[in-house]
Length: 435
Image 1 (cartoon, one colour):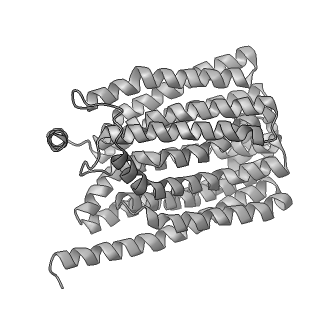
Image 2: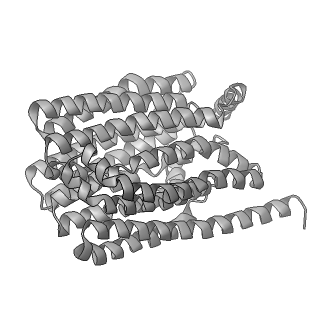
Image 3: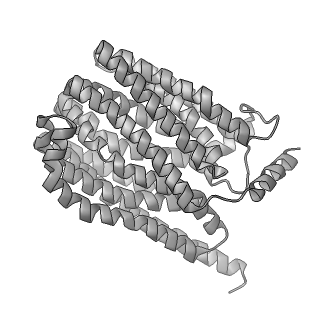
């Protein structure tokens, strides 16, 4: 019965014409742009109508929740999107995601009494964690839609979620000036989108009678073994981003953390393009690699990766020339004094973008374990850089530590991807009887 159902899915996918890479990119980019603008709008409301300390509390909640859920996610969306042979049903991915998300939420609730924060900060952290858990469920549904190359539906979900969260969050904060109240409103908005839109899209993509939750320990165990290395990798990536925030809060205070988080969030515009390109190209890269079309695989990966170099060469000079004015307009005059920090963050983001494209290439080749040493080295670089530089240089030190970490990640990705391609070409030649 399982074989027949998988065959029906494969048949349906073959009958449906695949969306073009350009179309997928347009939808994904548009969805991410709307979502990120709305998320920045929430941060801007806090910065303009609240204080840097309020922004810092919200940023701290995100910094604590992000690594936990990055690990709990196990990057099942990427594993699902590259499962071109349909080895596992959606119910396996969905059930495991619900279980790991629940464990992540419980873990954050468990560590809260151990952290020496005030009661408001603790409640905000828990509410942000709840919102992230809702997002995790939407994300695994996005993996199903991505596998069917229905990125238009994923984009619409992001657009609706971003717009509603900005409306609920902003209106609630302007009315109450309570960070707890507006974060609660954000949770309500995300839950409404999950129930009202995401589940409807998932049902349309599934076969009649196919379940969301269907626990099979053998399937769960195989998925955990397959995706655990990638979950660890994404946790390390998240830690690379958030370690400077933890140490800034420790050494410099919540207000400095708020300023740094506001500057760093401007890099979301870059991440939008990177994520859109990666999500649009991952399934295509996976097909090229599995079909041994290595030249086309490398050409597509090179076209994607060159974007990071353009960002560094163009973004850094622009940040130095226009950064003060831009930061003053977007936030307040005190933020304009940190244009040099913005320039360093742009450089770090450009290098990280290139590294992230190479990581997507490794994901497409389903090389998950080999990424662990890369990001372990990158995280260690971030930790040492922050410990040495933040006490001496403050926000500049945090930005430089991110730059060093990104450079280490890029170098490691280049080495591992080169070895992966060499090995794959050799296996292909052996299988083709070339030796």
